[in-house]
Picture 1: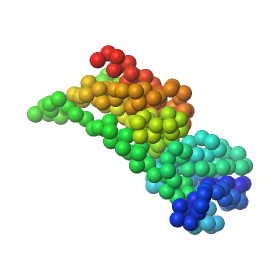
Picture 2: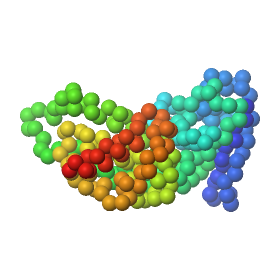
Picture 3: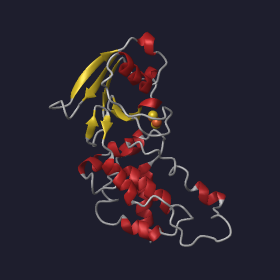
Picture 4: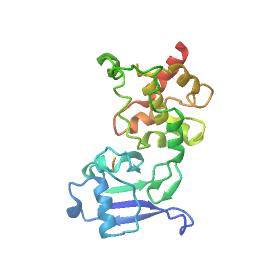
Length: 231
Ligand code: FES
């Protein structure tokens, strides 16, 4: 099979280019795409740069654009891909090198929604208790592994990378707004007011389509808007 991979070393290359690697299918049968990339590094080209850590869909390090769709390489079985595969770094983020992107802006948006509990006051003699029903309201909101696949797939994030908080940041905001233990719901919603932070979403569901965890940031954004109207 052939994999075309975008290569770019900003210190050596004038512009990005595609480099083709031919891999013997007998050598990589049954592998995940991440393992195939490691195979290429080990056997064909040690200069290829990728980011990875866990290899099991937990750390969120290896988001990349494969045949036009953002995926985690470690969760993508080679058997599900066609004979010809083209891999780009995640779109909408500056390239550090090859498939490694700079996610600084993505993390700034995450930080901007204050992603930690802020209770009004903590009980003195026991831990903070949450009912089973209230805990269930966090399902579908807390599982994000911050791979960036959603925000990178979002045209509104491409056009307003510094102003629109983006699907990941807004999913996280919704997770804390929904948490019965948090005491800053109004402040959180107020922080998202204005034309850009929350309202640049056009509801095209790109984020939801690519989320490797099956989460629904578009729904979370709609819930935040409803919550803003209720305050
Ligand atoms: Fe950790 Fe893929 S390497 S999520």
